Structure formats: structure tokens, C-alpha cells
Image (cartoon, rainbow over all chains, first blue to last red):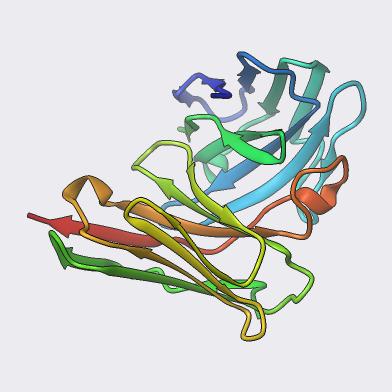
Length: 113
Length: 116
């Protein structure tokens, strides 16, 4: 089946630094990738939709300058959290659409100290 | 009002019990309905999807959709400790497609524990 590989699984960074999260589609081409954020015991909140070769579409209330999304190829999409703050600590998950179904990465636990 | 409402639980049942998980939604434009299972600190995995009212069965799992009542359910028969996870309902306006109408709206998730 379709696999989305997400790295890193866990990252701890200092306030003010930037962190990059990668999602790769291993055996298919992902023209669209979705990025979610999930707080403990809460649902997934869609942050943005990225399309290969074009600008990402951000959901209302999501700072596009803070959460930079790049989808430069059909197999790689990245989310960069810039100038991270402790309130950015969360679980970030990517998802790709494959033949109408959605496959999720394993998530990245970001802790900003 | 949230577009999708799901009782967060937690729900604790003994092994072998029948589990009923439910979601209600307010937007009649939703056409596709999915159930995901998420283990702790992992991404969600698709259990079932359906787009029509009625029941859909897959092994121990049955998905039920009632569009007239805007209500969906997931039943788990003969529940096992390995079923312990968070169950998320999700819905979309379309299934896939090239526009944002394919994006998923999730319920809050129900935490299920099946104890031996």
C-alpha cells in the first residue's frame, strides 16, 4: 500500500530556531499533501494544503510566514516552523491523497524549549 | 457549533464487548465518511470509508451512515485489547479530486480502551 514517510519522529529545539519536517511519498506521486496539527487528546486541525509546484493554501488563522510549506517535487513536501516558540509545541502530521484515500505519515512530535 | 461532533470518551470496555462509536455532523454537503484508528503518537490509519446511507461491514467492523439524521457510527464486534486506540471520524465533500473540497474534517476522536 501507499506509504508516507515522515521525519523526524521527534524533535526538541530551542525557542527562536527553525525546524524542518519532511514527508516523502515512497511508492507513489503525491500532487497534494495536507499538513495537520494535533494537540493532546484533540482532533487533527488542518493547517494547509500544498500542491506540487504551486503555493500552499493555508487555513484561516494559520500564519503562512511562520509555517512555511514547500512542495517542490511529487514525492517530497516539507513544513518549516520558523522562529519556534513553546506554544508551537505539538504533534504535526502530513497526509497525502492516493486514489481518493488519504494516507498519513507517522507524525512529528515537536517540543520547543 | 462544530461541523463534526464526536464524544471524546474515554470509553473502557471488557474484551469481547461490542463497541459503538458515533459522530454527528451539521453540514449536509458532506458526502464521504471515514473512520480512522490512531495509536498513541502515530498517524491515523484508515479503517473504513463509505459514501451512502446504510451499513458497510469489514470483518469485525461495521460502519453505518444515516444521512437524514446526519449521524454516523462505527461498531466493533468482539473487541480486543489491540483495538485500544483513538478512533476518529472524518468526512469530506468529495472523495479525492484536485480541489480543497476533498479535504477532511475530523471529529475530536474517541479514546477506547479494551481491557482483558
